[in-house]
Image (cartoon, rainbow, N blue to C red; front, side, top):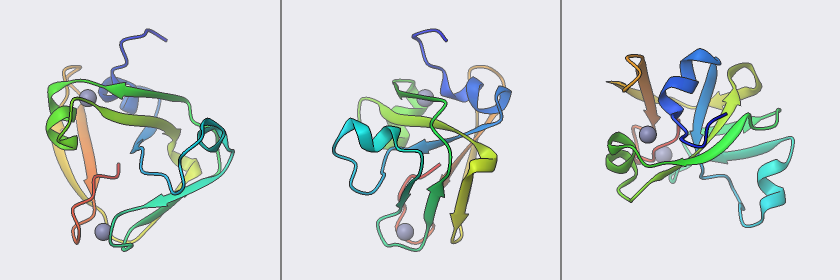
Length: 116
Ligand SMILES: [Zn+2]
Ligand SMILES: [Zn+2]
């Protein structure tokens, strides 16, 4: 995989889902590599858990991710869609990625936390 991580294109081609790094208790690297992890939004209405290892991890510096995160980059991890279980209502906002694919960004409609 190239160093220039284009999460937008990877998302659809590998049938992965991108989760913004807001994993509970994420302070050490071994937490990231754990086979199973959980996370959620600020208010707790949306929770997710994953039963598989990440396919990739990285920071995306594209303009859309900067706007989404409010910072210089967005930390993302790619996960197999079937390994991710989401509870709670997620609202999605679709944009056209540089690859031409549609990228759906999921967030909590209650607290606005960027999640997927
Ligand atoms: Zn929330
Ligand atoms: Zn991006």
